[in-house]
Length: 248
Image 1 (cartoon, rainbow, N blue to C red):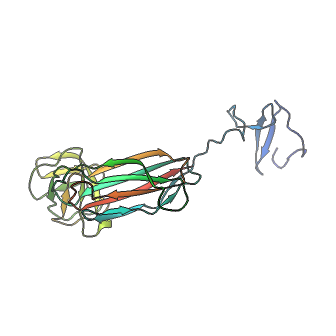
Image 2: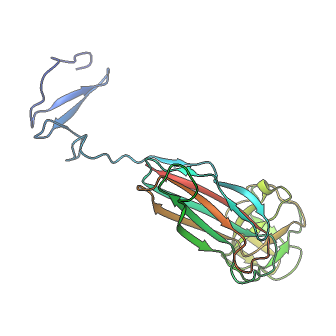
Image 3: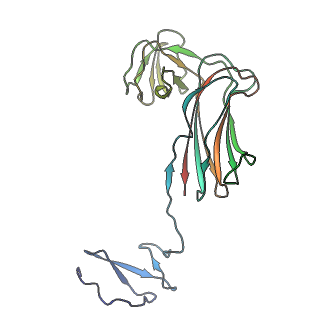
């Protein structure tokens, strides 16, 4: 009954129902043969199995930025102490249409077993971006944030389902977009409305890619992302962004 908490300091007996009181209502609780509380509608005792998952969106490891040809960018190290899994989200874009030499840009997830020092970094996972010639076009007008139908000045129709990159004077206002429908050679729809306002005649470049890498990091101390834009034959500038979500 509300306001009645009963006798205190009693030992819980297996099979007997006790009640938890929150100040207004009382809720039935059970105990197992070891005297541990059992979760309602469950056979698992509290204290035996912790199924709680905490996901944390980390600060971007590589903020969206232009990376020149023949340059490597290394993110700050991310502590993975107490983390079980980490999902790395990598966005890659071309700054122009020209093909790369032999390989496209390489993205590496590197890990270390030590809390400090630089000699213990090793590659845990990596991906290579495309090196082929990329399609480019230009927008025919200004578009506000949220716009979903785009018209280009002229040229070949974009490729349905491909990811493109809208170049903007400010790197932070550039964005990736996926073509969801095409009408003729100059009109196309994007899967989601624009995040930022985009200006007329600004370039829309094909060959953009987005990678998701989920790795087990329970036995790893720290990680970082390396953007290697001086892979064999690379001679083109790119745009990159990398982020991470950790799970504890």
